[in-house]
Length: 384
Image (cartoon, rainbow, N blue to C red):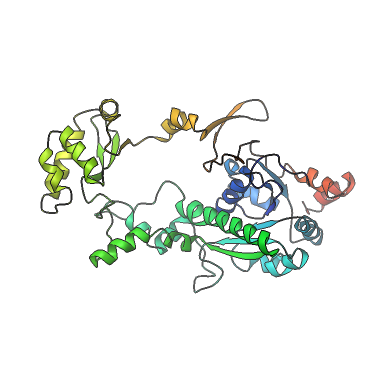
């Protein structure tokens, strides 16, 4: 199999059976850093309309029906030379398909096999279905998001899928590859997205242990309780954020706004409402653009709350190569999100735009030695 030219994972081959967001995001991270990723899906999944092409850059994509003997044979041919296998089915599905860790390990004992699921491969919820909102709620994270007098708010991004599932899976795979380098042994990785979100609670646990009280939604030190760590509306209906946790930052803000007496009352609960009211009124007197100009060089931990469109054209993210312009197949420009993990000697890169569903199928089969006629027969018998 040809090897990529860039990245710390040059020479690593990943077979990805996952779909939707968690697994494909994980394999995108690996592909960005040089791994060869072959994503495999059954053709029936395209009917769901949930083929997130934005996480399929730097990859190859093939269709394969693992419920056929021929499809399974092709799969195990790929596994023989692979380093990593990734799957995101409900627990038990890979056993029924005959591609579980025990079987895969017999073909390739050095394989790193990673399963991403909602609640993990063991425990009382092993058979329970769910999506991002369910993992956030079960872990207690969702109860801490939103306004205090309203129902918890579902975030506009998939935190559990990406941070709880994809990123933890990538970390687990890298750890297992490092261990294999030292021991020569592969291993199995069990990633629960709900586990991942419970892992987001160390600060909440700290404050609970300090106060003896459960953290409340929008009513904690780092969540709207105090004026020094809050969001404020501006005169033009936009918003900004203040994160002046340390008193030196808060003091500068208070002095600038003409209320130096509030500097020593940063966490005074008896004056909390008064200070919040003053800050809300003060920030609403000017537009976001005016505040941007006024506060730009002040060390107070402040920031604009940007819209999605603003992020896409922000000079900072263009300079940091977090927002890129790629050339599509027809020569058109495509906006893409860059590689957030930046290494000096083996940098990741966005080398190719996302492939279409099943686009790489024929090329991969030819690489395995199948003829044009065999590939055509596979298509006619729904093996691919």
